[in-house]
Amino acid sequence: MSQYQAVKGTRDIFPEEAAQWKHVEEVVHTLASLYGFSEVRTPVFEYTELFQRGIGATTDIVGKEMFTFLPDPGGRSLTLRPEMTAGVMRAALQRNLLSQAPVHKLYYISELFRKERPQAGRQRQFSQFGAELLGVSSPAAVAEVLTFMMQVFETLGLSGLRLRINTLGDLEDRARYREALRSYFQPYEGELDESSKERLEKNPLRILDSKNPALRDMIAGAPRLFDFVKAEGVREFEAVLRFLADRGIDYDVDHLLVRGLDYYCHTAFEVQSTALGAQDAIGGGGRYDGLAKELGGGKEMPAVGFAVGMERLLIAMEKQGLFATLNPHGPLVYVVVQQSELADHGMQVAFKLRRSGISTEIDLAARSMKAQMREANRIRSGYALFVGQSELESGQYALKNLVTSEQTTLELQAIIEILREPSIREGLKA
Ligand code: AMP
Image (cartoon, rainbow, N blue to C red; front, top):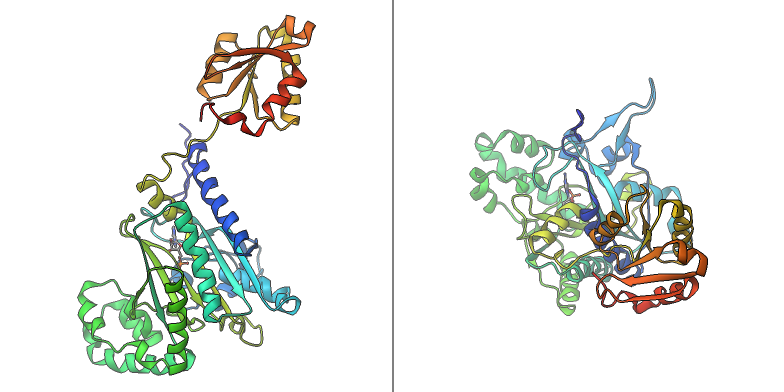
């Protein structure tokens, strides 16, 4: 064993699990294109100020969880991205995307970094897939991103999900609400825990997120943000709920769901999975029209998006047995070389097959024929193609189906034609 271990909070993904990732990623890519979202990739690090402004200085992420470093003495501080929205918005503003088209629908599958205490479902390097719809944040736009997200879950076969949804009103509603919350919690100040005391000053909405059981009753009795939302905001929220109902998407309205950041507005949502333990949030999102302005974009830009944790998604799928049937194919052909002097010829044959789009494996260690056959079976090859002296002379090669043991002898070109048949995998080892 090496004296080096993977860094705490990171993990290695080996081929069997990588196949699960690929499966999930393919579903995300396919559905993104069905819904008209285009992929965006942004740098892994950004200037630290982007996250300070874009996520909010009072949040745990910015306060304690960022991997921040100085590239060189006197340089500007950089941070490994702890979430995607700020970077995507920065990129959109930098490129002035909305001057090119009024609406942009972007999605990503990306790695993120947070200095959190590692535990099941919580890592220091993790991935999210998500979408950002820029330029319009009508109820239809909110429903569009939510439907995309829920269809990914559905296509993957996930069950036991709970979508919680709330409206946060606009900035003005929340300013009034913040004051009401302060007045409500003030008399209890002595009973609040340290972090809630701090929040009372900076951002009392975040007290509602507290998981401390001692505060549960106090929080339950607090004024509700919903009662501060103006009629127009309520109408909009109802329109979102109607869209979801029309699409058969179940939801629970949860008035305690708040996202404590100023630039969030109107609809906010979160999805939980019963297949997960303590870290049961699988994804969340909402509208953030104010973010562009916060990032110096001059004015508000309608925007709505979501992010789903890939690791948690995969854990939930594994627990529900959704990978049981995911059995990646071995190569279609294993080229078996009968004598080591023919190794070059074998390589030539393998090369031709691969150039013709046929997945092919060949021994690279000049092992015995028996060892090659054992390996061909171990990696679940569909066929063995034999290369021996007589094949070399006659140009006729023996092709053996490793499931049925049937064997045919044909010219290489004829074999290539057969193996290129789209239905060739049927009846082979899965
Ligand atoms: P957030 O950006 O905090 O709203 O997180 C969105 C989703 O990302 C969560 O619901 C989780 O599924 C996932 N997530 C957040 N933090 C972590 C982490 N440290 N490790 C693994 N997944 C995470």
